[in-house]
Image (cartoon, rainbow, N blue to C red; front, top):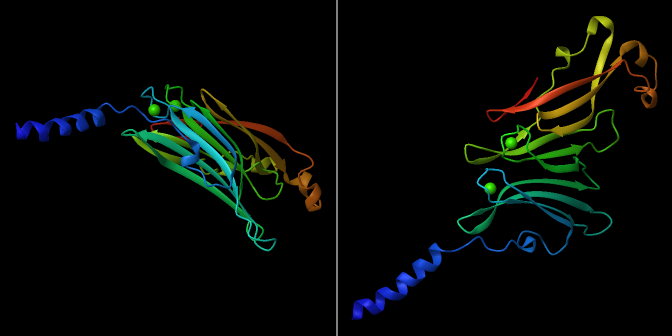
Amino acid sequence: MKITLWVLPLISILLVAGCQTPGTFNASDFTPPNAQDISVQDADFNGDGISEKVLYYKSDDTVDSQSKTTNQHLLVISNENSQWQTVKEDAFANSNKAVLRFLRDHQVVDINNDGNQELLVQWSYERPMPSIGSYNIVTVINGEYKILDAPKLNNLEYLDIESGEAEMHLRSILATRNGIEENYTIYCQEDMEGKPMSNLYEKSCRELKITVTLDNGTLIRQ
Ligand SMILES: [Ca+2]
Ligand SMILES: [Ca+2]
């Protein structure tokens, strides 16, 4: 009888633990009190039919006018064993002393059309440049969350140097179900020669479209 009294509560505890359903997601569990512009999106990265969360927020860590910092945070949060946990985070800190990059856009898309969703994150440079910046994607590879950077561009593979093509700059990207469509503008030496910096990219030679695909966990420029 004594044994039963000990065992029964233990069994009850184990049963309750075993039957736990994913708890309610509260963005406030993952954001500081000064978080602004909070947004939450559902995304199923691993294709198990259960949504993970993509959480974005800004936080202003300004101490005084001499020390101003604005942070942008992008978190992927997954429900692991009935606990919401951050599985990937990208933070962009910009202060009045150092500006690195700005988060420009993020969207949930299925880049390789396999039914699992990816997160496409686009960021831009500090100052207006002929290029928009770059991007990365968050995806699950063999059960692990990974950030894949855009593949490094080798201009020489695409520029017709003999015809005077000198520079190429990424002007926009578009997420499609066949991959990431990169749109480049190409500039020729003769159009840039002798121009001041402000007019350097006034005239372009041609446009070029390249598709980047996600194959076997790698981003490949076609
Ligand atoms: Ca999932
Ligand atoms: Ca996919």
